[in-house]
Length: 230
Length: 354
Image (cartoon, rainbow over all chains, first blue to last red):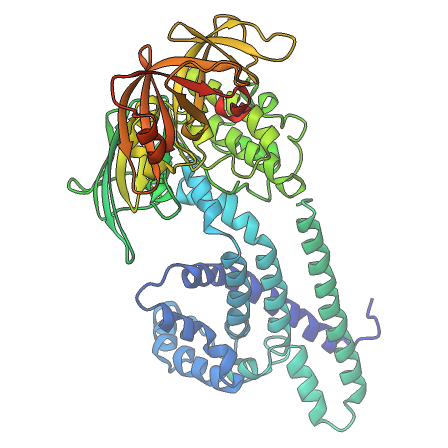
């Protein structure tokens, strides 16, 4: 069951899948929260929040990774406190890789979900309110189901971004085999050695298969949602 | 009993509205931009005005001074919007059940509204009229204390309108569900409403029983000269004859009209447009019009244009006629005279009978 892949490559792929999965799962509720906040009527600090959420999209990923080191590294403002209080280290760990990938995926996910929320007309929510639905019930029965396709799109987008994230990850957590070495960093490493081209070919193929597969699954789910099957 | 007393300053106009209505069906009538929909939104709790007070059956749902402002979902007010606003991800049945406690009530509402064969469909597969009927069913099944309707029939064709109007009437009468509706169709007002509030530029111009407001010459400019006309209540005294005319009795006098499908003894409301009445000082003979009423001239109100509005009494009821000032002079019409009012039978369309 090696599919022509070496054990080292399998470890890299599994690390990538694990990191991307966790990054997507953890970031999704955060992204939904930010998207809802940004789609609401303007409130104080909204534009500041908007800029903050979008920073990873516009900054060079290396800069985002460096900022993570500054904040969450062992000498960082929060990182030192985390280490001294809980003994938790984020820099150069797999948890750190999850955070780096999640933060890079966040703006993409927020944008997709926000578009979905804004497509849900307030007219429908008003109608629901006159039918006795509390704001919470309106959200669960109207807003959430109607924006579900956009949440799905955001999930696939976020996962793909997390799978492909390189700059911030390698800066914040390096590429430690079995711990933080993901498919992109393995490809980069293989590029540095003279006889790495066969490994590169295999990893690139895996990358393409995973990405196209994810896209196909999301298309299929989106179509089922549209026809009302879900 | 609905008690509304609200004021709000918009950039382009001021809303300042006070009215009470204990009627089954209250109609808000006025040109677009008069503030009709805003009033419904205030009553529903979807819009908070600068100041005022709204109470429903004695319970205050909004009072600026006392800082009372119940959110919409606590107000027990059903709302049929101008557009259906159905939930696209739910079936017709799920839409109808949204405001209920869950189980399908043993209710014939789907049948009456002609949507019982659509229950498992999604809204996007329905026509505009069907969607609006689902919206009406949804708002009624929510079992509200008051039903708001914002021109609910404007998206329906004339035939469907004619079938739904009696149902709305029955709704208000039998379910004990008071209705506050916005309309700019005087025919709808005459058929459905008991109480009429006439609005202009955010102000109440007239508020009172439909028959009182419609027979008041002062209301004519706001209702529109082509729309003006009193509603009279008459009794059916002979079932429709072979030629389709039904005899009704008004103030002891017989009249013949088409389009009245009622049994003997039924009470009908008939709106007679002021422009459809011709006046004569002597009883005309050899004339094609079937209905010649002996009336007493109560009042002549000259308007700004060439027309004058004449208030006539038949028994205890009032008719309005609109003639030219020139005719008033030529005939030497004066209050107190006994004259004749001529009404063409065919002038009364189905939309004028309630």
